[in-house]
Amino acid sequence: MINKIIKYFLIAATLGWTVYQFSIGNIGNGIFFIFVAGLFVLSLFKHELILLAFLHLRRGKFDKAKRTLERIKQPEHLPKSQEAYYYYLTGLIHAQTQSAVKAERFFRKALSLGLRMKTDQAMAKLNLAGIAVMKRRKREAINLINEVKKLDHRKILDDQVKMIQAQMKRI
Image 1: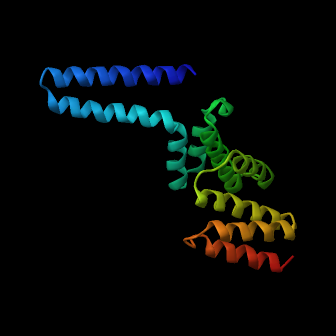
Image 2 (image 1 turned 90 degrees about the vertical axis):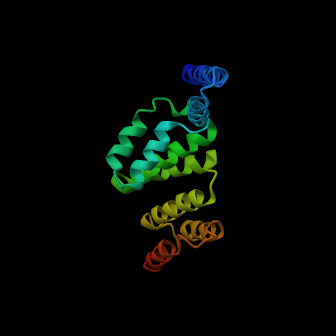
């Protein structure tokens, strides 16, 4: 809560300084500070540590992403959608580096909180399907794969779906 108050104060101060810069004729500085205020407004809606963890994951640096997420001490105080992405990222890290049992718990929590993007929902369900296959729960894996196919309109995850279906045939 205090963090949010500080962000509101920084937004107000930056906008005040922007108005001052425009009033004394420094148009360039005023435009620059509009962008700075925009960054502060963006940080209200997107938690900067979650964005940084996404960046580390995209680069394949799972240990850095894990350390970044560990800096968020109380994820339950995040807005609901950001909390969902916190658990989604934690699930991805656990699926790649540690146990699948913990990853399953995090993916289920992220889905229950509500991931906004359909591709993220599909990815979480695909990971859950892989875990279900690993635990020899074929019916659950089939249901999850069908949901992934419905959510993946652009067919980005087709190769992974085929791979999991091939693994299901061995069960």
